[in-house]
Length: 396
Image 1 (cartoon, one colour):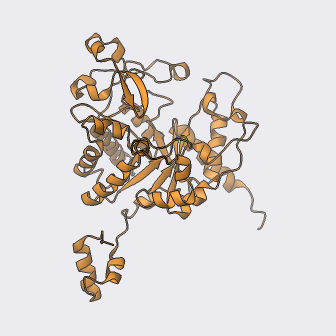
Image 2: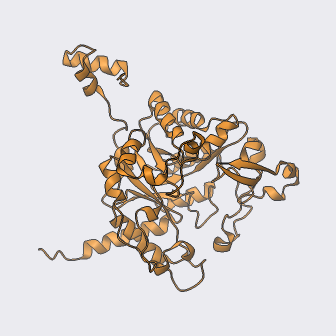
Image 3: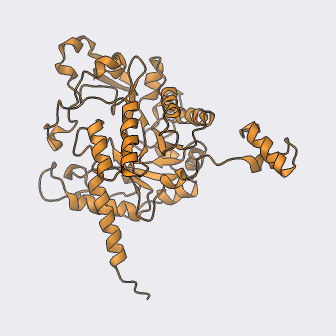
C-alpha cells in the first residue's frame, strides 16, 4: 500500500529513530493525526453538554443566512455558525440554503430579472424559479432577503438584509471571536455539489482556497458538510494537500431510505440507512470526522408522539471514531414531538417542549446539536445541567 505520510515527516522521524526510510514500521509510526490539537475536542460534547451549532444563524428570530442572523447567534452563545453555500456564475460562494432564490428573496418582484425564471433539474428534482448560478455577484447583492416561514415567523424583517458572501461571514465571525475572546467555529455546507459541477463550477476548490487564504480559517475549528459523498472524499485530499488540519468533515444524513444524489448518479444505490450501520460508519470514518443525522435517527417517537428511548446510533458512531451532530432543534409547535407541544397554534413558540427535547438529546450523548434558536437551547442545556448537579447523590 503506498504511503500517504508526507516525505519530509517520514525523513525526520526515521532519522530520529535511526530506521531506514523504507521501513514499514517507520511509516506506521510516522502517520500524523488527521486533525490539529483542539479540533477533535471542539467537535465533541464537553462537560457543559453538546456543542451548539446555529442552524443558518439564529433563524427562528431573523431571516436565515444573513449577517444579522449569524451575529445574533454568536451573541446568544453559539459555538459554531452554519452557512449553507451555493455559487454564483462568476464563482463566488454565497450563503443560501438552496440555489433557487424565489422562496427566500425578493427576486420575483424585480422586473429586470423576470426573464431568468426557468425550470431546472436539481438533485433529481424539477425546480422552477431563479437560480444563483445564473446571477453574477453584483446582481445577487441587489436582492433582499425574505423570511422562509412567514406563517410561523412573520415578515417584519423582509427586505432589510441582503445575501452574504462567504468571505464576509468569515470576517464577521473572526471579529466576534476577537471581541468575545473565544473560538467561534464555522460549519459551512456545500449544497448541490454535483449540480454545480455539471454547470462548470467547483465549490470545493473555491472553499478550500478561501479557508487557506484567511488567517482565521487556518486556525479556528471549521467543518465542511455535505449530503453527498464523493465531494467529501475529494475534500479530504484537498485539505490534506493544503495542510488545513483544523478543518473537519461532516457527512450529513438525509431521509434514511434515500441515497446520496452523487451515489445515484453513479448508478448505485446505497441508502443513508445503510451508511449508518456499523460497516457503513467504519467506511465513513475513513474520510469524515462527524456524522450528522436527523434527530429522529437518535431520538425516535413512540406511538403516542412522545420521545422514545435513544437508538444505538450514538454509541455505534463513537465506536467507529465519529462524533455525532444532530439536526435540527426548532422552537415552534409545528416541529416538536406531539407530546411536547404547548396548547396553541403550530406557530406558537413552545420553549418548555423545546427545552425537554434539547435535554433529551444531551442525555443521549450527542456531541453537537443544530438549533434555529441557539439562545433558547443554550439556556435549556444550562438549566438541565444545573438540575442534574442539584440532585443529591443517593450513594453518599
